[in-house]
Length: 158
Image (cartoon, rainbow, N blue to C red; front, side):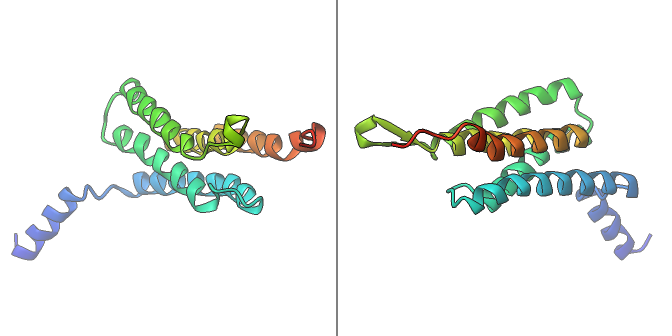
């Protein structure tokens, strides 16, 4: 075997270049997470919220990666629950940063943004685990909530 063939073989092993089927799975899951997270982020971006398009996409694809990597490396799917617990906790800290107390604590803002940060994390986890239909259905329900609830139940004037 030539030196260049040995180098190519070593790089393929090091970078764990997958077969076509696995590559397709990776791309589909990441794109699903990015698109669905982006749909939620676009809605928040249009409303001028702090966590917008980029944040929602990054949270969604990051969550997909965190569950996909162990699953694709052969770790028992049951063990991935620990990874998911870490994602949920970590996203909680990210969301907490979006909450602001106003008027000496009498008014709190950013709760929907904070709660909304969890949604693309959950959607990304579902997509990363190959549950794209669940991720899509959840995205549609979440979009309905953020768009229809304010129309059906307007906030009282302050």
